Amino acid sequence: MTLVEIAGAGLAELTCARLLTDRGHRVRLPPLRPPGRTAGAGPRPLLLTGPTLELVGSLWGDGLIEGGWPITHRHARWGAGPSPAPFPQPGRALDGVLLAARMRERLGAGDKSGEPPEWTVTAAPGEQPVHEQAGRRKLLAGSAPLRSARDQDTARLDCTGLGWLHLTPLGRGDCLVQAMVPGPAEAPAELLARLLADSAFAALLRRPPRTAVALAAAPRVHLAPAVPPTAGGGGMLVVGSGALRYDPLSGTGTAQALRTAILAAAVIDAAAAGRSATALCAHYANRLRAAFRDHLHTCLRLYTTAFGAGPWQDEIDATRAALRTGRQPLLALD
Image (cartoon, rainbow, N blue to C red; front, side, top):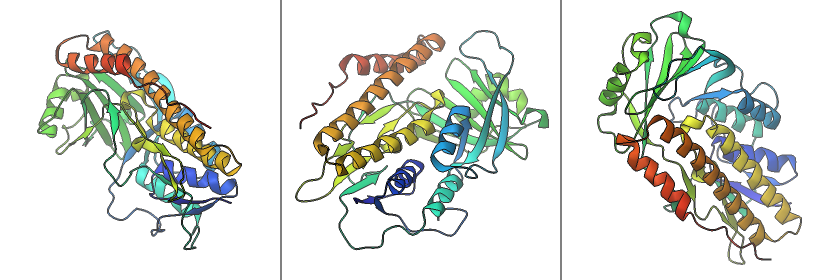
């Protein structure tokens, strides 16, 4: 069967490896680290809600998401409207690094032959990737202690005039504090503290985060996420956030990353069965572009509702421009 090089140890890459192995293909894997944590990686908190938890369970079986911190409710105020009551929304806050380490451990040693692979699956292409991006907004993130233990079962969303904020309880009285702001974000801890002071969340925390990072968060799609094999070398499929990045407001980023893995595995499996790799790669790119455009429509609706003018106008205009001038689907040539 097909030999596939799995170039990284992210959730999407490892899920693709799992699916390919289940279908009888050989996979060459990154080194198996000691159980617990990938070397050099800090915690990467993820909030997984019902549909994403179900997807992870259907792909990996039981036991993968043990531990973490259970979330039972969500409280969301979007825009300037009144604050509604919390509503039930079961979920779990997990360390994405530990989740990936468990996935890698389940996959075992992988293929050890020296044969050249027919495909490489990666979330981070070696050369500088080319993306279509809508906006330049930043996600601020840090951790802070909650004031009351009663707030440890509810994920919360609130808005200020400058952006939205989200609190994700992590257990032991700690929580992840995130905020989305338009454009560059210098001194992220100071900016995050300012947003908290303007929100209802200030009363829920003992103090704002002492340190914070600012991460690029505008939606983007890779312009060449699939390259078919040629006589001179193997093909390549980009998965995960390297292929398609969602605005984290949607809460579906992890699920979408896993869906790219499902689609990539299907491309390789169909090519092994004799389907045109060129046509399959074009289909893969088209599916990502369609998902990207659907997500932009969601972002446009949400951000024009909450931030119809002022600091967010450039982000809203960039989203409209991306929808108006988006690239046409590739032709699937046999």
